[in-house]
Amino acid sequence: MSRVRALVALVAVLVLAPATARADFPPRLDHRGALGISPEVGGEEADFLRVQSNDVQASVSTRLTLGLELTLGLGTEGNEIVVLGRYLYNRSDPGGAAGVAYRGYFGRDELKTYFQGGIKADTAPRFAIGPWAQLGVMYELSSLVGVFAQAELSAEISQGIRVGLGISGGVQFRTYVLE
Image 1 (cartoon, rainbow, N blue to C red):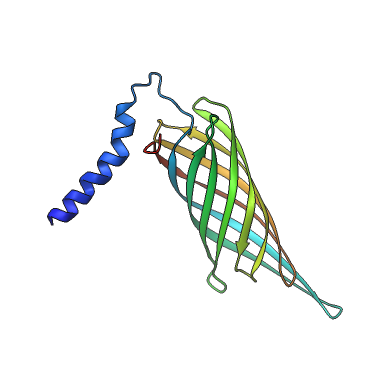
Image 2 (tube, rainbow, N blue to C red; image 1 turned 45 degrees about the vertical axis):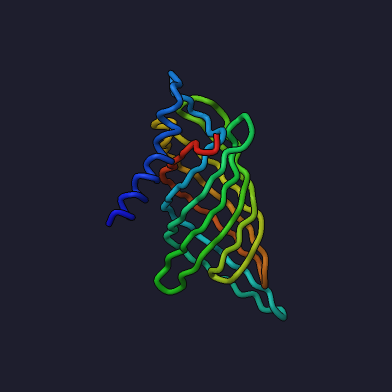
């Protein structure tokens, strides 16, 4: 039991000490040097078109998405590298997705917008990989927490073309241990 308490204390120090050590007033709302984790929930509609020997097969699937993003703040503007893991839930055809992207923020106040571009791989309805873009808005509750909503478009290629359109929202938790 004492090991669990020691681990909880260590995590609390790593997360809270950098925030309390900074005496920024007003609080700094950029993401310079921040490590973040963002649970998210959303929905996606994916169309898959496959052409094989003059035969065209099309499938459409709507899914609930449950994701987790890891972020690393870069540079002086607070832009981030984003790594995504996502579960795509559909009763008849579940799947997963993984991606990596660069997120650029516009604005330094509580309310900011962003554009994110990268590459993503999806497993449903068939495995495909290709470009991925998101437009979003984030509202900073504090220097450690922000809430966001985003829309995305992806176009992946494999044995056909998969086009996904989705929306999601979540919470970003940050720490400044690297700063």
